Length: 241
Image (cartoon, rainbow, N blue to C red):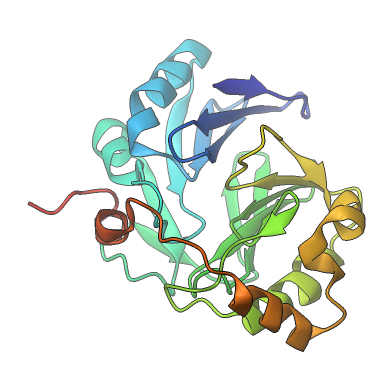
């Protein structure tokens, strides 16, 4: 599924959805230069993404993952092989196949597009979010979901650290910031930070300790692809042979 949403006339924006893992990927492109970047690509959706790029007359310049995914295999490596794009993750990532890494406070620039890099660990220790101030858009990965937050029980996750990421960094952005998460399981495509502050039950915890107790009480099954996805994603999507 591909959804086009209104954005500044100088930017092309598409939201793509992988139904198998309920993963959202995001394509952003500078209309004038024709250069594009993708956030959280899915290997199984690579051909669809390449076809979309061709239809729009765009060149993929950068592929970014918000963190090391456990529920799907990234398309970064495949996309780099086919387009020559740069692959990027946070410097905490264990992936050794990356073209470049980024850290908190840096900017990823592509023509008129300027993504602010926000380190937001807790779901994993290499989790990042990206804020596009010009459009008031936040790509939150699995740190903040619509009506929820990312689990914190594997890959060096930590509920207390996630609480800090949410309340000291993510929720300090303007309330009208549009939230675009890494996943959604109920057919919701976006929200706002203001709406989440009111309606998201995970954000109603009175303090850090209460949030930790809530997250530690969850008994969630491991993602079905976890045994192969993590190692594959540390190799930019290359399956072990």
